[in-house]
Every structure is written in C-alpha cells, then in structure tokens.
Image (cartoon, rainbow, N blue to C red):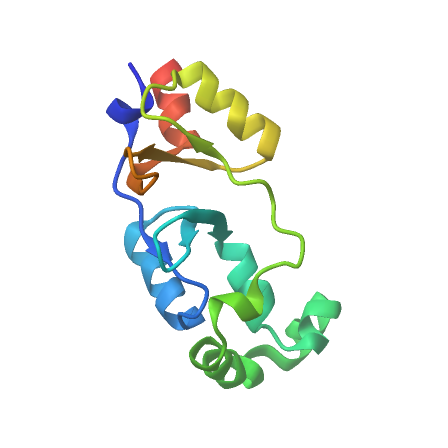
Length: 150
C-alpha cells in the first residue's frame, strides 16, 4: 500500500480566493484542510479550518472567548461579512506550518511520520512530471492512516 492507493480527492484554493469559498470547500469535502496552491499549481501550505475561523472572528471575541457568551449571536453578521470580504491570504498565519507533502510511492509509515513531524492532520500526495509541473493526486488524512493501521 502506498500514498497513491490511499489518496482521496483534495480540494485546493489560491491565496486570492474569498474565505467564503474556502469555507464552502472545507465543509463540502469534509476534510481537515485545503491545499493552498500558487497560480501554477505548486503546493504551498495547508489551510485548516481553524485558520479561517481565527481570521474572520472580530478581534474582541478572538482575544476573549468568554465575550462571545455575552454577545451571543449579535456579531454573526459581522463574521459572515468577513467571510465574503476577506481572502485566504488575509487569514493565513504569518508563520505557516511546514507543508506535509509526500510522493505517490510513500508508505503509510512514512506518511504518518511526516504528519507527526509537521503536526498536520493531512499530507498532500504530489507527483512532478519531467517539466517540474505538480500533479496533485490527492491527500491522505490522519483518520485514513489510523484506519489503515487498525
């Protein structure tokens, strides 16, 4: 069994796409992260749901989560507006985590080691052709690896 065999479709976004689009992809794919790619399709980083959430929350709530209890749903519209107005680049952390990338021939053990080292719940399976162009074959989640080792 190799990464190619375990890989499932992986949604990707570019930095200039709206957070709303990224959120729709995350929800629709039921995946822990989206792959951030350049315009040429080169993988750059994973965008996890918590990155999106942190970026669209009002500062007052992000700094003090207990404040959310007091104001309940009064800021929901502001959050929705932020989702539409902000881009993925706007909400990415300044220090991006290392990209967890494997070749199609990586073993499950190799993928697990990459996830453990990078702290990522998912690895991208990418194959490069002779022109150094990336071909995203999909991604493998920690849940898929745990099921494999079960």
